[in-house]
Amino acid sequence: MPEFGELPQNNNAKHKAVVLTADKFEDMEVYIPVYCLLAAGWHVDIAAPKKGMIEGEHGYPIEVTKTIDEINPDEYDLLLVPGGFPDGAPATVRKIKKAQEITRSFFEKNKPVASVCHGPWLLADAGVIKGRHLTSYWHDGVPESIKKAGGIWEDKDVVVDGNLITSRWPMDLAVFMREIIKKVGA
Image 1: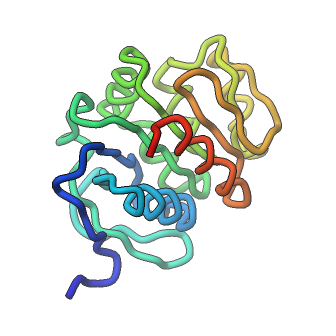
Image 2: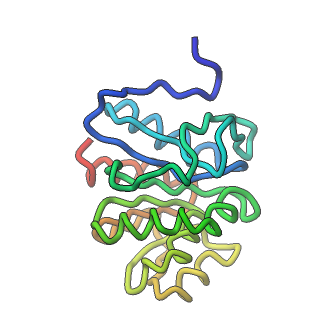
């Protein structure tokens, strides 16, 4: 029987998603998208700086299946970048050069990228949003980081710009997932 926080996986799945996160992620912004993708038959890897269990802001654990350094973006069909408190997972992930490289690879290959809340900090730091429309959490300097990186920030529940899908916070997850599912055909 799996431990709490271990995800059931479909290792024969046709499609694979990778979630770039770290300790102190926003629980709902990880669990809801991950379980929606698993229910649609996807394989989902949780990638963080190190293996083991990481914990969400509200205490829910999840098992890291690969380190960020182990991720080969060519093996995945979707990149998901969730948020969390400004001093939690998003602040950690945005500084990791390999996370930025993974993000750039997805954009260069026009593969779907979905990010919510403080997650777009990574997109800004990776230099992939110049001229792109997106949204994010509306405080903590996230919109300012987006604008400084050349992004066009909009205060909407979901913004889709080509391969990029963004939302503001956990209360937008229903429309966020609707657009992800539309984009990836799950």
